[in-house]
Length: 329
Image 1 (cartoon, rainbow, N blue to C red):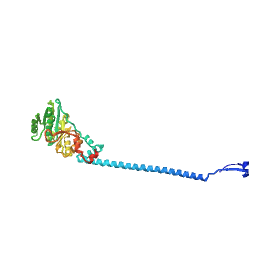
Image 2: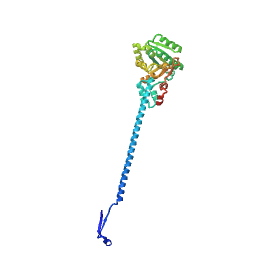
Image 3: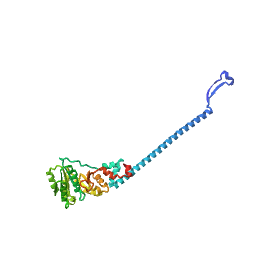
Image 4: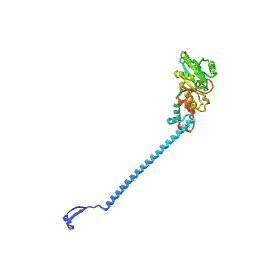
């Protein structure tokens, strides 16, 4: 490249009349520049490779996390299926079992217990009046349960206790109750109709425990059934205990609950606990009816064979000690 030209100074004029200045880029410098550019490109390529490796690593981690999440979901789903199967084998209806498994939040026994409504029977005082009516089909143990309650929560606690038999009972049923009352030492009154019972209660100023025994044949007598339904539906002050057998299947219990529904049972009473192979049907009935339980019959002994329903005992009975229970607890 021509940079400058001028007349040559006197000192160098022997070499020529003009002084010309040129500039050029040495070959070594060009090579160095080319090498620097190549190295820079190689450096950019290395950085890009690192970026690509990081992206690949992130993708691999994401896939692994996704697989882990899917595997965890499948494990939870499988465990829920096992819990549902366990509860069903214990006697819990499928829809109830699925609901418990879905809302258990890792504590199935607590979720099961929360659905079991129980109401204790508090002690009476001398000036208090409490009336209990025992309803249910024949052969479930209404009379025996009534006598146990009379002794445990009446006579043994020095609370005045009276027994009333109402309606048309089977042969010898009224006489049997009269004998029980005489043995226990409490007054007994037999009334033929619910109209008569209503009048008797209106004129009675009884203070203490009043127990009403209803006939098990009420379902076969339409008029008497309607009279019982009308009376008990109107008397919300009466604790109406529907008596069921603990060893019966869920379908039988549900059928009885439906047949006595118009009598407005406010409590469930289960008998024959000592003969029940599983408490699943009982628990299932408590959950599906949303009716609280107070008493259960634990044997034929009078009055020892009566206790208050324990939700903890039901859960322990149903939640067996196996692998599924251990993993879910």
